[in-house]
Length: 98
Image 1 (tube, rainbow, N blue to C red):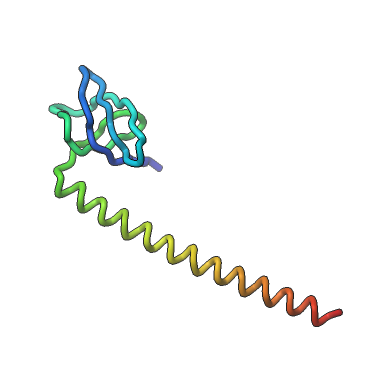
Image 2 (cartoon, rainbow, N blue to C red):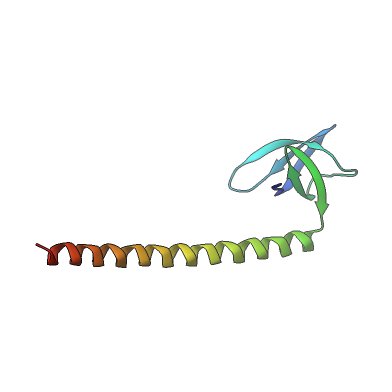
């Protein structure tokens, strides 16, 4: 499975670009597409910029990612509730057997 990571180009220095991935994480990436400039939104895979995105495309992707994170948080919350209820039932069963 391939995973591209989205970021914003902070500066371009020859064949390398400094990319901001958010949360204070910046990394150098090889420029693999033409005309990458400071301020561009990009997709980086295996340390190489493989695609440029318009600001609108980046915002759309971000909305999808945001929705996915919300869905995962709901699933995790439900899983935690389920585990807690199972733990309580187990404790009740164990105490009833004494």
